[in-house]
Image (cartoon, rainbow, N blue to C red; front, side, top):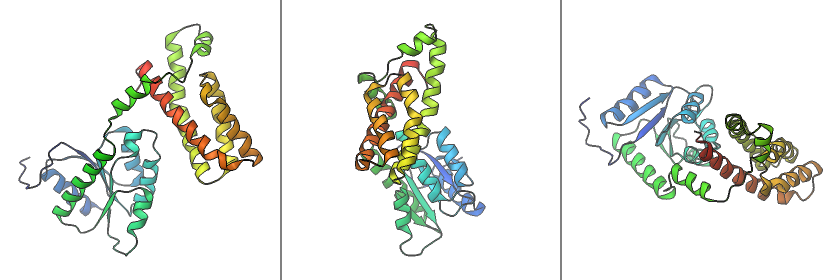
Length: 267
């Protein structure tokens, strides 16, 4: 395709367009094509979240009114991703709702900017460029750098128990590690959500769900913290200490997973 546009990004970007209206979808993708920008399209919020989980993008143009899951709900889901880079992707709201004050809902959900439809090409280009630039300043480190940093820290885990149970078979140990990497993040996210909602019994329940796995990998640095979260949450005591403990547990587990991925070359 011949690029006749006067708008050019100084770097290549990939855009996720979340839009259910066929005419609006065609308008946005035609503009992006004319800019020479690579893009993918989601027709609802569920598809947008799914594409974000499986592919890499630099910015999302998120329609607000979509079936099955709207743009605000999809944004909240993405902001709760485990992957730091994906969860912090710039998200720009595209909305036909020009009611004053509505934009605060978009920012509260974690969006970085918004445009009211119909918009001008220049407005879209400048907002994408500015939003990406601010994002790069705020999050300059790449995922690879983050992984390396985590790996260079002393390891939080000890695989001796698993290695003994698996008779030292490396492939079997790797299967156990993969199960940990895949199954633990949703539990941590659920614990964090319950904590944010001050649902202490649910927070305690999720902390209990982590205990056996944490002890199997001998992540001793958070053993007592998880126990305290569970006991305090169930008994309703010293509740003000729980958010900090949850934050610590979440951070340690995130670093541990990065370390495990590096050691076993997992994606």
